[in-house]
Amino acid sequence: MRKEKLRFILNNKMFIIGSILFFAVVLVVIFAPLIAPHTYAEQSSMRLAAPCSEYPFGTDQYGRCIFSRVIYGSRIALSVGIVAVIIETLIGVTLGIVAGYYGKAIDKIVLFITDTTWSIPPIILAMAIVLMMGSSAQNVAIAIAVVSWAQFTKIVRAKVQSLKNLSYIEAAKIYGETDLSIILRYILPNLVSTIIILATLALPSAILSTTSMGFLGLGAQQPQPDWGMILSDGIQFIKNAPWITMAPGLAIVWTVLGFNLLGEGVKEMLDPRLKV
Amino acid sequence: MQDSKASAALVHTEHLKKYFPLRRNKESAFVRAVDDVSLDIYQGETLGLVGESGSGKTTLAKMILGLLQPTESTIYISGRDVWDKRNKKELRSSVGAVFQDPASSLNPRSSIYRSLERPLQVNGYSKEDARRLIYETAEKINIGRELLTRFPHELSGGQQQRVSIARAILLKPRLLVLDEPTSALDVSVQAQTLNELLNLQQELDMTYLFITHNLSVVRYMSDRICVMYGGKVMEIGKNADIYRDCVHPYTFSLLSSVPPLHPRERNRKKHLLSGDMPSLVGEIQGCRFASRCRFCRDICSQQEPEMREAAEGHFAACHFAGELEF
Image 1 (cartoon, rainbow over the protein chains, first blue to last red):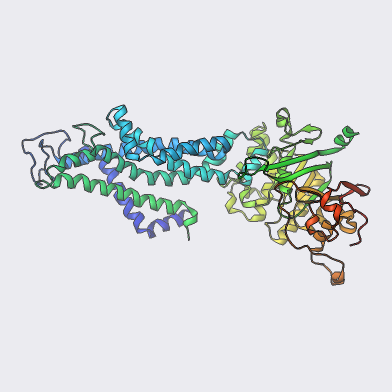
Image 2: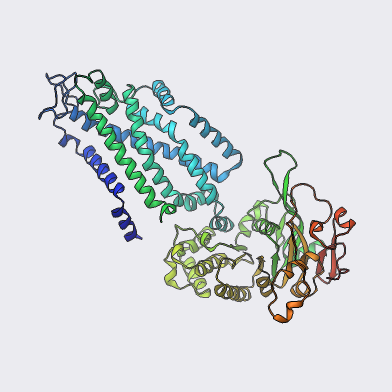
């Protein structure tokens, strides 16, 4: 088994590239203070400076080092993204299991809520939630989770529906397992790979949503270095100082691409149906 | 009289019904999966339940196992109502089940030992007692100790099925429901499994409800045979009654469908059925088998046949039971 997985990893170039991009981001997050030449809020007299050895991506209109801000910004993007994915996993998986396992009226209610959530444009709903609760990184994470748990529910529900009719679940009912222990001991362990796949694939879109919210000015507030915010600040200077928008843009593409490739790789590795 | 009958039988059902509602119409559209089945399973016997797909065998078994709630009536095991919540705890160690597909019978995420330990743990055995009992049972049913630490996907189909059997008998049930336990196995493993089941039955004094559509297996295993068609019992009787002197035209056709084992039997009388089972949705007038029966007369499509006793303990639901010449 283990050898097989190792061979799979070595043969899958996309997975390797994804992992390299991913670990680079993780290293940047951990060692941000060591990598960044300045702190994210430090202002200098050089405003809108072009890239040079002191400021690799130039400075913004307040004279802050763009490179350092983007480096520190990875912390916001990643932490908000991860918190959002954790919350949406909890909501989505719980509802999916309950709907799939109990069926009938509960299933119908959950399905209705899921479909309703799904039919609202996510960014608009997230904006409404953040505007209601106030702009902050925390609220952005909650808002993203609230708009995007539905796909977890749909997939988990379908999986549980097929699991619950398997003979070992019926046997467990016969020897007296309660519903709760069937869910926790028999169903949940068999959902782990599905949940990991869903979560790794949900992370890049959560990060994208985080930066979108930042771009709209709803995320972390100044002087916090949110990638979306740096982008939107830079747009007005895009003709004279394109590096301001280029740096966070590249960072977003790097991170999202890395997570997407990694997610696809994990999916292929854990989902036996795709194995040839 | 009813009471004495119920006490002699381990499992007793009267006019048991299971209707599955259909979604398309809100009212009165049901699939009559099991319709008015009265059945007794006696202590220590093996009752073979045969019938084609969709005849209600598995639905009946699931109701007996307490997995499906009957629409009407209930099941008594040793005189206790299976669907009475107060009896649940007591009854759950008195029934066991082995299912058709060995691969899905075991939790893929649990080791074999863990899969066997869980039923004991749930029913209040201590770790040491459970260990002793698992080793004892594993030995009885030829599961080597080295297999216990493995996971289901590392076992062969026959081994998986033996583990399922071990799990079913751990709690020393009085009734073991075997739902096509050998149909997914190789023929050589089938024979071995069937013999093991017969030995276990003697050793542990169990009653078997053996569900299958394999007629040679049921002949080998059963003391009595119950033939179902369209959710109803067509004929029930001792093994020999059914195989030599069946009186229901459906049973005759069912037995005709088995190829003869000996060339001498090549010219035996037989009659093969064509067509399908009638839809079980909606009210059915008369006998369910009427549409495919070559002896069908007016009365058959108008009046539902009652159970008639053809010989002692041999019943058939046919207006002309015993009068027909096949």
